[in-house]
Length: 278
Image (cartoon, rainbow, N blue to C red):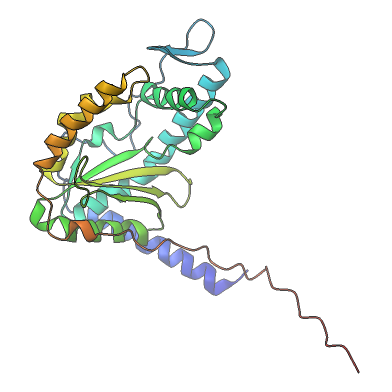
């Protein structure tokens, strides 16, 4: 074993732990609702299965086997959240963000099942496993800053999440879009559990618009919504988001560079073949 590399990893982990402990000890993170202790389990439980062991809601359904797989996915996300939340809370504290909706950081089992069942309905042949691999918001957070400090806050927060070993897997910056939703939705992969989690970066105005349009968006996404109604709902959402001011520099914010795996010294390139003689 490489003693120097092992020592470096231990020092890095100790430094990260110290930074988190220091940040979380500075005081209560500003939240829009009362926050639960990060290590405490949340009172989120999968809905009881139907008589056949499956799940059924509003014309959507999962078989007993599919329902069991989603429940397992929910349980893994809950376990992983306990390690992710302290980092996000520290990120909010250090970047002077408001941590909005912290009590709702775990997506409900029914919401996840609706998403999976809808995807499978819209894409015949898509398996429950393939659908679950696409989900990046089973664990989700929202950080919010006033428009004047938004861009610097996002840069600081994203840099901290990356520095603590989380790999940026998605960065959807919609501030430069002429219509529709405005914010940055990012997804990250936690280094130890491999759990994907979402962090949305908002201003108070963009978050208010998101909340105002939520029911419109949910209706728009229902499989049975007629095309004319879909267009009408989108126009209503566009009008609401059009009133959201764009923070200075927000449209130019980009994701941190993706982390590359460390080279494995045990895997060496084969030695070149000897040159032919004569």
